[in-house]
Image (tube, rainbow, N blue to C red; front, side, top):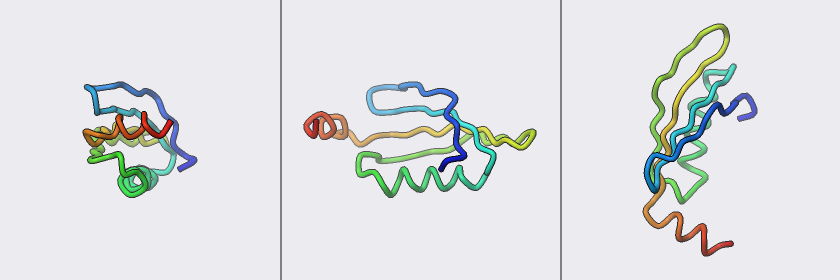
Length: 78
């Protein structure tokens, strides 16, 4: 969703990304997570945590776990 602003991204192991973001539309957190799950066959799991609302902004962290073969498939497609 256009309302999301990414604040930070960290690699947590070979197949896990942790993304910190904020939005002015709290419902877009769920929209983003659902889009990750349904639109990418490379992702095996997502988990949203640390949802906090303050001064019209919602901040959150989402952990994205890729399937074990995701990097190999992505490399082959290039």
